[in-house]
Length: 435
Image 1: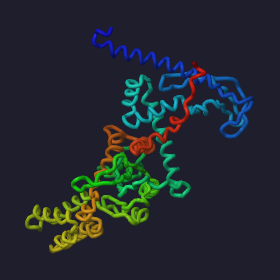
Image 2: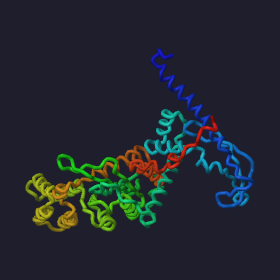
Image 3: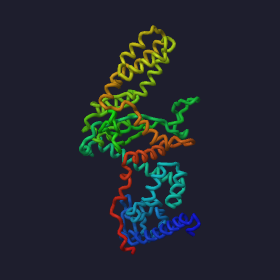
Image 4: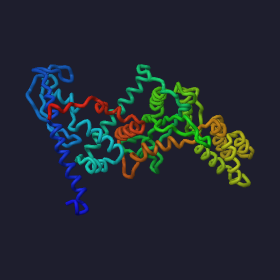
């Protein structure tokens, strides 16, 4: 067989199948050796009533080794009119037909690829057959648990019921907080009554706001800031800026922002970003993303193109002033033309952006201080966490479903994935009774 050129692969697959099957039988034996969960003639149901023993029932659970069958003591509660098995709770499979290990596998695969593709990957890589619908339900349930845990943690930190420890020494020099948003395509029922930008005026997306935290501890040889590897964490919300602000506050405290020498709030110029920053970290430096500032400058140049002698040269000159942080020069250069009526009103609006944010556009000074001036980090985060999974062709989500999957992706990208599966770090069951 090995001389055929394909034999090794066939042999690998056959051995994996055999070992997986043997592992499933061994797992059954280990679980049987732990008893069936019999707790006497009576046991408390989940609602606190006294339930009576009603014999033994089996249950088949799909695990990372394949299906295994358990025998469990069964109790029936007359008050609730429902039955339960204490052993299910001990094993973490109450109300579930998949093991915690397979639930984690489904969550990881379902958060990284479409549910159909995730099912194919699990079958190909693990040899476990799981339907796309099962992966969808499992991954979204794990994501909902992640969201609930994150919200509870945030509330506890904000309420000072949890007091995070200071960052480990040496404390990073700078902590950045960047915020942006993007639309996620959703089902029509999710946008009922919402105005949109489509031709019919109806919304086809729901906005998710994402915040990225990261630290900078050094500059490269050219004096440019270098993001600390593995320092990025994320929070998000579909529920608007106030809901995001609560999560940002908690993450800022969890990350030890109060202990950092410098905090930098970097955004696209939206007023709510600066209002949030002034409230949550009032000592922070504010920086308007230079790429958004250049877009506004291009819009200003286009508005004046009909009256400036050389529009391209005018824009080039103003761009140099923008890079230098000389915003007053831009305002003066645009204000010298005699406009009236609608043109004057529009010019005043465009210049208002620069007037309001002049102190946030001192780009030459920021660069001398070794600060980022562009929002590439949050734009990269938006792409990696939201776009690559939730904005693919043909996708239309429920808002809850999208939030569940984005929660898993944030957890993974933040380096906190293992916190969702604490049972993995528990003491393993000893095999002696099964051998």
